[in-house]
Amino acid sequence: MKIRRGIITAVLGCIVVASCIKRPPTALAPAEVMRRAVFQNQILDSVSFDMTALFRANRLPGTLSGSVSATGVFHSTERTWSADVRFDVSNLAPNAKERRSSGTFALSAPSPGSLFVLPRSIDSSFQVGGAEKALLGQWWRLTGGTGSLQAPSVSTPDPHVVEMYARILNVTGGGLERELGGRYVYHYRVKIGSGELLNLVGVPSGGVPDVAGDVWINPDSFVLERARWTIRRLPFEDGMIDSDLDIHLRDFNVAPSATLPEGSGALFPLDTILDIISVR
Image 1 (cartoon, rainbow, N blue to C red):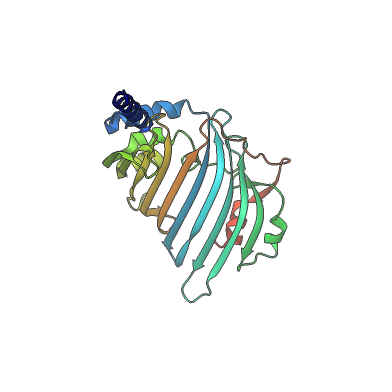
Image 2 (tube, one colour):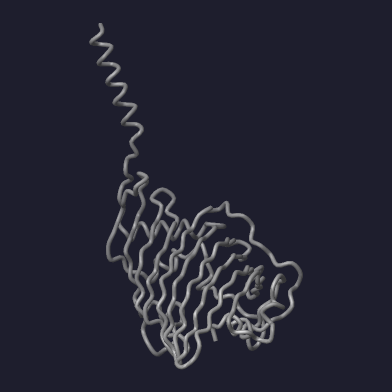
């Protein structure tokens, strides 16, 4: 009797242990994973994002380098997004003192075609008649040379980015992987074809950029969770820019509301802000 009870206990124990072990999902081909990801992201309503970027631009007459980090939200139905941004920029020209600037600000796009900025702090070695101090603490509606500055749809953090990736990327490696926490994820190494990239984002002539990276896709929901890109030789004004970009997506369909600007916001030229933070 004791032996029988022991056997039953052991069998039950094995069943419990086996039920606690997460079995890997059935691995699908990359094309099928991307097809499902496209569908899921087409019906995605909102998402939160965290982004970091390192960049270095070699242009005449000097070098522009720095880092940018942002945390924000995007809502597909309303086509609104907002982000809190931190930047650190160095502008070095031959036979000139290095110009550095850093700061924090909020960005808000309450509707397509409008972009507002709320500078919170600016520390710049390049002064523009005290304009940097006058900017702080209030919303400004950015304008370009001929009117309202359009928020670029390609660079805007958008939950539909997988749809774009599916059209232009080439999977070069990877597959279903198990992470340290025991969770499974589709992790692909990808490379973007230069011709497709030129057609999609309208890269200016003068050079073909080299774009490669990694994407992480949830094997259950098929939403894009992370994208990491290495961009080399991207044409930029009168030079080339290299950049490393890392984006994490979360809060799928439950992202908090976007931060909207208070008031209509006074107009402010984008060129002046770029001068203040030493980008131009």
